[in-house]
Image (cartoon, rainbow over the protein chains, first blue to last red):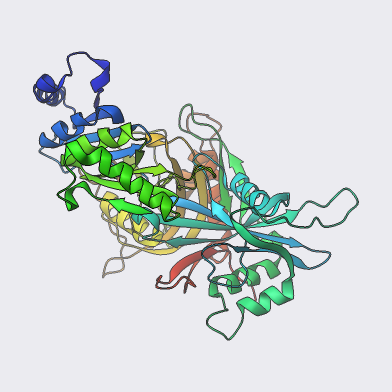
Length: 257
Length: 257
C-alpha cells in the first residue's frame, strides 16, 4: 500500500492532483500493490472530492485527518479491512461483603431501570480493568480493585451503527482508613444518585415480575455473583508471539488443575 | 444534536455555507444543544474544509460519507463519544475427538509459527459464533458447530491504531455422511496449507522450549481445552431492557446450580 499526503509534496496542487493520482495508481499496479491509500488533512479536504472522482472512498477519519483508499487489484475482490467495528463498555458489580451491599447509580439520562450498575465506555488503548475502575471512581468517587469478569454481552447496531461488547466485572471496594465503607458521591452533570443498596433489594428488583423493573441479564449476573469469585473469568497476562508486541491480558475460566 | 446535510438543502452553496453553519450553531446553543453534527457526502467534500474553518473536526467517515462534529457547550468538556475503538478477531480450536486431531492452517502472510489456528475478523454486525464458523469454512472448507469460548485476548495499537479483542472458540467438526472426517481445502490466495494435525504434535509445538516455536497463549488455551467443554465460557441469549433492542448473547462461565 502506498500513502500520498497532499501536504507533503508541493506538486499536489488542485490542477495537477488527478494526474498525479492516476500516475501513482499506475506505479502501484506495476509494483504489484493491491491498494492505494491517501491521507488528507481536513484543511485540504478539496482533494477528497478530487480523489472520489478517481474512485477513492473514505476508509476512516478522525480529528483533523481522513484516510481514503482505492482497491486497484482487478483480479481479486478487495481485502481492505473494515475500520474498527466495536466500542467496548464496562459495567461494575461492586459488592461490600461485610454489609452485603452493592454500589448502584441512577444516571441523569438513559434510565431504563430504577437503579443500575456504574457503567461506561473503555477509552482507546485502555485495558478492561483500568476502564472499569476509572468509571466507578468517576461516577461514584469509590475506589475499587478489579477481581474478574462475570459476563460479556454482545450487541449490534449501537451508536454510529457500530457494535458493542459489554464486560460486566466484579470489583471490591477499598475501605476508608478506619475500616468503614466510603459514601458514594454522584458525578456532577452525569449521575443523579449513587448509593449502596442492599444486595437482597437489588436482587428482588432484577428478579421482579414487573416487566418494567426486571432485568434478565442482571438476573443471570447475580446468579454468577452468588457462585463466588473463584468461578469468574480470570485475567492472566501472557507474552505475544508477534515480534515487538507487548504482553496482553487473556481472560478465561479458572484452571482447576 | 442537530444534523446538517449540505446536499439536503439548496441553500448550502459554498458562498453561504459558513453563514448558515454559524446560524445553525447559534440556534443549537439557544435550544440548549451541546454539539452540532454535519454529514457530508464525499463528492461535496469542499464543505468539510469550510466547516473545519468554523471549528468542526472529523468524527468518522466511511465509504461515501463523512460525519463532522463541533462541541458548542463552553461550560462543560466535550461528551462526544469516540468512534469505534475495537476490531474483533476470532480463532477456532476445531478438534475431532475420535482421532484426536486439531484443524490447523498456515497463512500465505503473517506466519509467526509453523502452524496456527484458523482465524479472522468478525464482520460488522456478526455474532462471534457466526464469525468463527464462517472463517473456518472460508479458510479450510470444513463445516463446524460452535461450542463455547476458551479465552479472550485484548491487545492495543493494532491496525489503524485501534484495539483488538480476540475470542478463541471451541468448535466441533461436522463429519461427512459416511462418518469420515472431511479433508481441509486451503483457501486460494490466503492459506498455504490446511490440515488435521495430531493434538499431541500441536501441544508439543506450543509447549516447545524453542522461543521461535512455543506459543504462551496457546499453551494456556490447550490447558483449557483439556479441562473439557463443560468448563468453557458459554453462550446464552437474553432479552434487553432497552426499548426496541433485540435479545443479545451473554457469554459467561457455566452455572453449577
